[in-house]
Amino acid sequence: MSFQAYIDNIKAKTGKTPEDFKQLAEKKGFMKNGEPVVKATEITNWLKEEFELGHGHAMAIYATFKGKTS
Image 1 (spheres, rainbow, N blue to C red):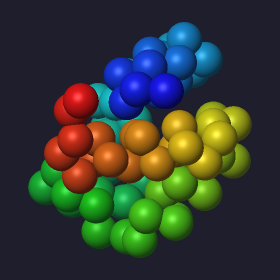
Image 2: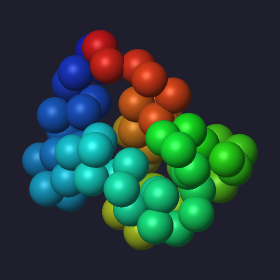
Image 3: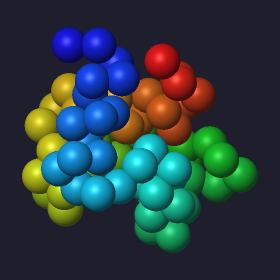
Image 4: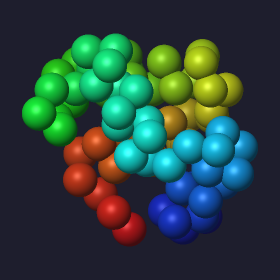
């Protein structure tokens, strides 16, 4: 599955874009100044628990936090 397919599937499932997740992560204190300030595991666990994402999909969102766009 391509990176974009992961992002498209996440949006279809949750209704949220990577930018939406970034804003939520900032509110939770997981990010500051647009950069993650906690370990990837903490962020992916949150995405799995709160949004029922699988590990690969949670990692795709984390990758967007680190600057990956495609």
